[in-house]
Amino acid sequence: MKACESCGERVKIGINHNKRSVLSRAVGLVFIYLPILTLPFVITSAYLTYYSLRMVGGDNVKKWSDFIPHRNSYRYHLENQIIMKPAFWWSLSQSKLFWVLNCSWYCPYSVALFEWHTYLVKVVENWWCPFGHDRKQHYTDGAIDQSFWHIFPAEREKLNPEDRNNPIFTQDPNENLDNY
Image (cartoon, rainbow, N blue to C red; front, side, top):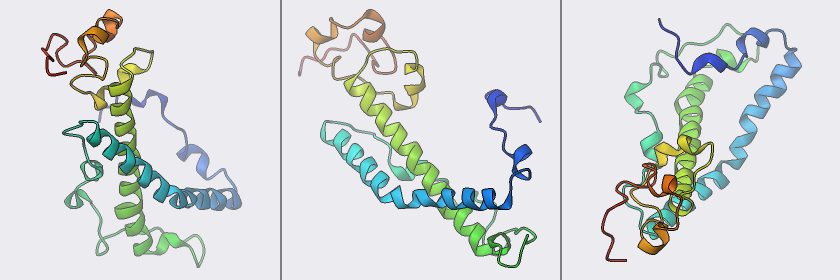
């Protein structure tokens, strides 16, 4: 199997896990679940951003559900969920329900939520701020047809040529936008 091209700067965790104390790993596990407390705020923020984009004219804006993996793509379900050999008698790693809830609900929905929110913020950035910087190439998944600055011909002309013709926020820089 060929190594992925973007894996050159992998996070090293597996090599270090068993070197950590049980207490350190237990506290780390608690820290994994504390962000659940922030989910209502993140969900609210994402939906406010989504509806803001819709209200200023956004069409074809992706929804949270577009980032959630399809249920039929999950390898394990309650019936066939693998579990770990328990390290001690009350270990959650021996519960099928624990793994199903983690792997079928918490992780995919959380990852999808943060990916969706990131995507929305990139769309907002491309709409209101079509100005180049050294990380702008990472905003391509939030590409739009025209930025706020591009829909007004007089303002479009003020833009740096690289910003005026950047495909991330300029589908067609010569498009006639007379209705504005």
